[in-house]
Image 1 (cartoon, helix red, strand yellow):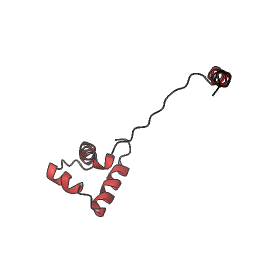
Image 2: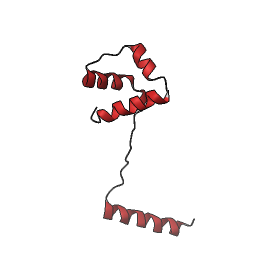
Image 3: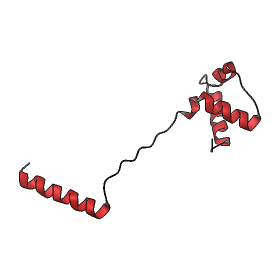
Image 4: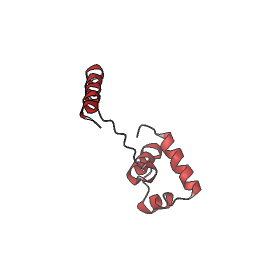
Length: 81
C-alpha cells in the first residue's frame, strides 16, 4: 500500500465522518434469563405470590424439556421484569 493510496483512503474516511458524524459503538447484552434464579424467583413472587425455596428453584432449573417450557412460559408471562 502506497502512501498516496493511504492518503486517499484517509480522505474518504474523513469525508464520511464529516457527512455522517463520528463513529459510535453499539453493544447488545443478553442475559441468560432461563438460568437467572433471582429473576425467576421475582416473577414467581409477583405473579403467584409464591416464594419458592432454593431446592424448588434448583429443581425447576434442572434442564428437563418440561421445565424449560415452564420457564419459557413464566418469562413470557412477565416481559417487563
